[in-house]
Amino acid sequence: MNTLVPLLFLSAPLVPFLIIYVIGATLCIVRWRRHPKRSCLALVAFLLFLARLLGNVAKQWLMLRKDDFGWDIDTLTFNIGIMASIDTVVGVVAWILLLIALFSHNSLSVPVEGHGISEGD
Image (cartoon, rainbow, N blue to C red):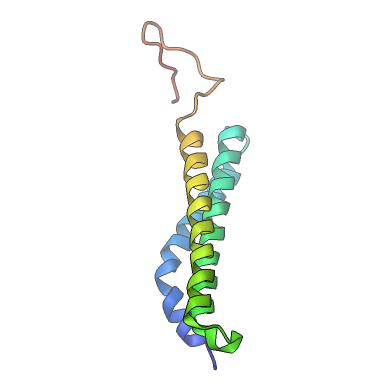
């Protein structure tokens, strides 16, 4: 059974996310010298988001090819459930890294007098 065309149609809604993740990773690399720690955390987060996206495509492919593997619905459900659990953990880790990169204290910034807030944050 040819699964390429159905897989492309199922994966088409993911293309905007792919574009966003690639642009985010590119911006991290471009700004690496200015903010190396933040860029590193954000880059790892965007790479994890890309891995999740590929995992979603793999789940769709498995659903289309389940008969080729001889899987019944219980086996498919079990395998998709495991992949969904991994997807959730990877997503949570990616979001935590991205939030840390966005809101972490910049050790190079100078405190604003009387506010206890750093410039550039």
